[in-house]
Image (cartoon, rainbow, N blue to C red; front, side):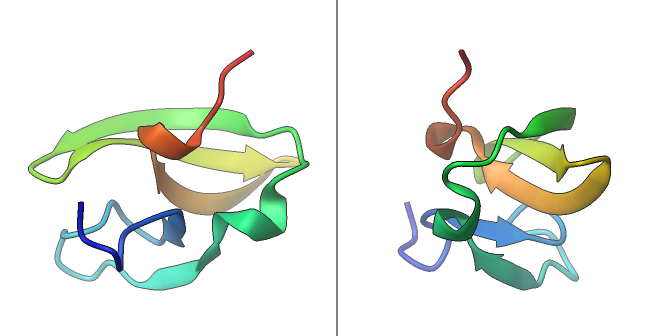
Amino acid sequence: MNSEENATIWTLPYGLVGAQKVEDIQYYKRDDLKLVQEAVTSSGKWYQFAIDEKVIGWIKVDFIKIQ
């Protein structure tokens, strides 16, 4: 895994044309995330998520703990 993609929230799944870094997932570590949609790309499986109905961005599934 590319270190640039590690635990980072993106506007689109990492590696897609136009994907821009939003911020590090650590900022949202304690918030309850609502999964909006899922995507599979050449860089792996991704979830788009929202908090309080506001879509934040895309994060690699490796960094989401579903309970």
